[in-house]
Image 1 (tube, one colour):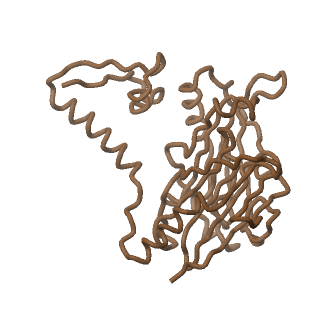
Image 2 (cartoon, one colour):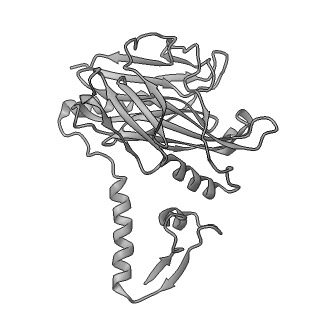
Image 3 (tube, helix red, strand yellow):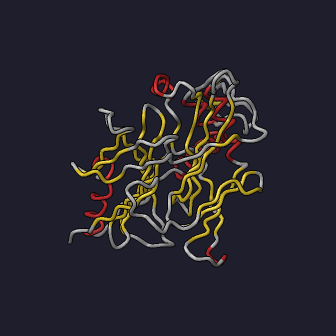
Length: 308
């Protein structure tokens, strides 16, 4: 039997990542052993990681199965482009599947990211709660996004969807992708987020849970031409259970002649109010989304009737 042996510092290397893509920073040594307890620990660790990433169970009723098909078709239903004169549509990717038993709903919901040459430009939470709800949010640094449902223009925000700020007291982005991912995971732990909900009362305030892995890691090879200032980036989520409510974008950016630095931006993935803190200090706040039908807003909710 063989066992993979990793460096002793658990904060420096993710064992599963090191096993998949070993590097000089996260080396893997394979040794033979006959010690059964080592095998049990190793297998147990892997099983725990797989269980933590498991998707929600499939819907059982025939109606929920039909609803699931409608939800899953959303990624291909809409055609998003980074600008009105762009020919190629953005690439849709299902970032996570989730259920929220707190609010109910039918079937498994999804969060879709539309990616522009390696960088996410838009997101949508898609779920069924009496009707199909497609909650779009721009993740673009600039205006210009357009979305069509068939031939119909359904969304065209006239302002940027996110506003980036410097992460204070952050290290200079590291040279290697593995080291930068480690930096991002350390930086994101300095943030927290609270769902302030749909009422003015603080009774609805709920601390959100940081999901342990990023929903999306930027594809730097694809971004090289379109986003030359980018050095790295990832999308993290603060969730109610596994339901993403707030998205946190971390980007390593080199602007002009300045050395690269870490920047962050939050985006809502809910119509409820949200607050975010950096090192315990307020860093971002949005109120309940009251106007969710404006085609020119960075956020819009498109509703569809569920056929019987």
